[in-house]
Amino acid sequence: MPTTETRTVLVGLSRAQLREWVVATLGEPAYRGTQLAQWIYAKAVTEFSAMTDLPAALRTRLNECALVSPNAISATQRSKDGTVKCLLRLADGNEVECVLLPYDDRVSVCLSTQVGCAMGCRFCATAQGGYTRNLTAGEIVDQLLHLQRLSERRITHVVLMGMGEPLLNLENALDALRMMHDELGIGYRRMTVSTVGIVPQIYALAERNLPITLAVSLHAPDDETRAKIMPVNRKWGVDTLIQAARDYFEATKRRITFEYLLLRGVNDTPEHAQQLARKLRGVPCLVNLIPFNYVPTPDGFQRPEAERVRRFRAVLEAAGIETTQRVERGHDIDAACGQLRGKHLGKPIPLTAQVGG
Ligand code: SAH
Image 1 (cartoon, protein in one colour):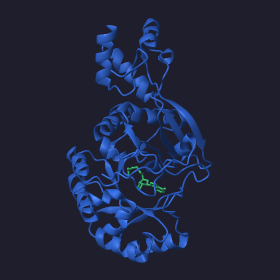
Image 2: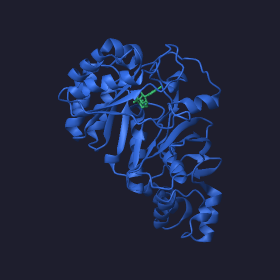
Image 3: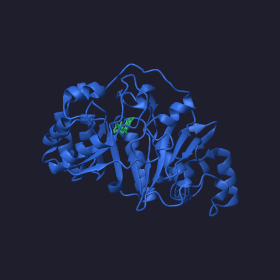
Image 4: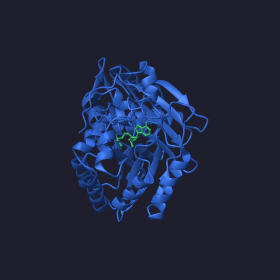
């Protein structure tokens, strides 16, 4: 059992584990564990004193021997468009980012799965800080609970697209998603896992047979360009990755999202778009174009002009590929990946050695 001081941390325990724990540790009937699960997850309550259907004596004992969460929000930025970006400070002092994204028809959250990241993508702020550790399932689900307390509306959608590579922390990520499904009623169809392209792990996820949407950070249609910006491509190339995406579709029947980050003069020409269209022909997919969210990088990457983005999109659409452009949100705050944490840590941080798969 994870503990802080001598108290047991409850967030991250499933309903079954909470039921066992109240019986074994407190000598209480198992249904008290069900009540705890409802308070902690469905109601996002952290204080035992607010858990009004528990007897006063039990609440006092819980206060002595348990703690819902040792994690706390250490910084918040609110955008005029409603986006709220938070830094969650974990029990060991590490910090990760999570974002609340309210839209007219849904409320989405973007969650981190690792402290830092080992993938070394050249355009990414998180990569520049290197990799520290995997998050626990409790730390992943706790990001959502903290964001829920800041939101008037219920969270409906979850994307694992924050710091880290979810497929390299697959068991904890899936445990967290299962808790969101079982306790918060968020359907797997409303969950997206975004990957840099760890091919064997795409197959491992497909084997679970869950209707989770897979987002693949493709960012280039050819190995030469992709390897320049994503070291992971040296291990699994573009064709292998697109085949894995096809196979993921066959296994889950979930349409693939290909993320395509546009970097000025690097991967944003009409030729790149044509090549991309050729490679994706016949793949049930959606391409999501993301103009580079500027962060300072050693390569000096720049954001393409709006006209270039429009032309890139027009080529894909002419080839019959459904294309969306990421709705730019939180531009008045540090919206790009890793920016808030970078500021908190006192950026600039040194570029660490690239690992890449
Ligand atoms: N490791 C996973 C999920 C985290 S990154 C993945 O690679 O998909 C989430 C998305 O943000 C990825 O598509 C990533 O390539 C993209 N991204 C990283 N830095 C960015 C930046 N500066 N501007 C825009 N998108 C960025």
